[in-house]
Image 1 (cartoon, one colour):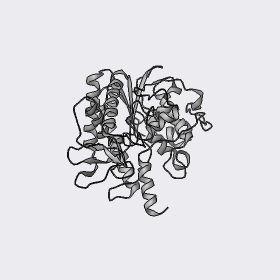
Image 2: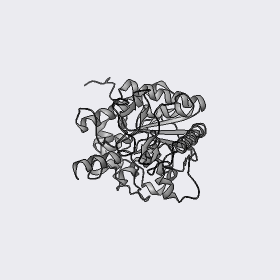
Image 3: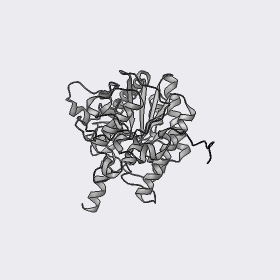
Image 4: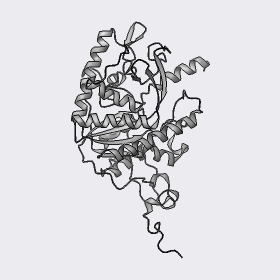
Length: 362
């Protein structure tokens, strides 16, 4: 019998049978050993795809401060502010689906990039093509839209310079952009948020791995130029694509996109210090559709969010608030139940779905 096999004596976390195959999902804790703790009271910034909203709304329950530099007018009630895109993320940038959109956001904020795309028309009003979902009623004029953008980009700069940890949730590799200068939009023009799609001006892109890595590298480098001590936590959204504009089936397109984003996270960790990866995507995949998703196999259920946040607390050495149930352990556990009422997630993709259903007469 071989006695010098290098696999002998591996810890349980390295063996599928021990740490995954023999456990219920509520007791799986897929965390690496090299994440530094996050102290209570740390200022956390957030950005990303729709699922990032779930992380952002639970940060306070972990004893952290969700840094918001664009909270909205105080005379508006919280539901009204949310309806106008305030407080959903750390600044009023709405959903940031791709790494390139994220990098360009910072480049616009610091004056390194000035896209040529004008505000889109929406009836008699105007919307910001880079934040089309923040104000469903639109701005009364182009000047009002541009002034609001100026204030927003100032809030983004403040956010970068004040944050201590930035949590980025990567969601998509597919996007629409300007042919003129490559400016990336969070939604396709003409698909419910305003604007008119013009194939002479707009084009589809499915970002390759090297492009995603390069965009994340630009984002981290520019952010740390202004805040050298800023830490990052990268994660991949477990939410599948609503639709794909590639020639692939939406299931295989989803798998390809998530694989690219997941590998990009590892590459960034090799290039930069102070970057952690949190396995929200892996936790949902391990749980399976019946545990993690609603009947549409796309909406992440509250019990899955609760378990994900408990694992986040475990990875970064935080005490778990009662709202998140118990931390995973080797012993069978009852299903964690969140006591924080789930709120609807704001997704730009919903307008695309509405348009598709209307076209099909459903």
